Length: 251
Image (cartoon, rainbow, N blue to C red; front, side, top):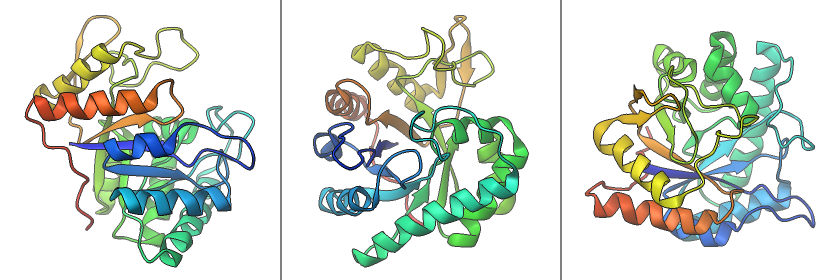
């Protein structure tokens, strides 16, 4: 099981999260590309930190919405989504090349991720963008969603994703952040959910039913409260349960 974390979401003099403290406990990082968060300097420094930690590096493109942190849905066409993903992934790929490394994957951020999970036309646009930038890149997407199906159909490697700290609806979708029950705040509960996801391929939905999911990576939100502690406890819990924690191999 891979543990991925959204990092590089600071901007200018404003700091978001404790990236340095999180990095030792994760195996993949998704670096903000300057639209919903991040800036060129943060992108460069985050890649350098990820290299030192030995984490696989991915692009984390989002909607152009800094004020809403990319978590507000926008009316965008498939062509616009294609261009947003190519632009942002290409920028981070250039910083990776300058650092002597390469990207391993792309994971859409926030509202863009959720919109593409629910809409096949947007999922197809993201898959086409990732393929056109580098067909060797993997695409991280919500397990059971259009993102995973579209990647599979196009021959792009899909890495189905689960969320230990997010609540699930009975259909496998994430509970919207606008709801008070969207997040799992108890670390022990989140770790127990992650172990069950990894071993049993199931997660308990908000109505008490079980949702079957096939996940190869579990997300940690770098902007979450006590993200470093959560990352540490999650990795320890998985490894203690006999789950091997490692990044997906690049194609």
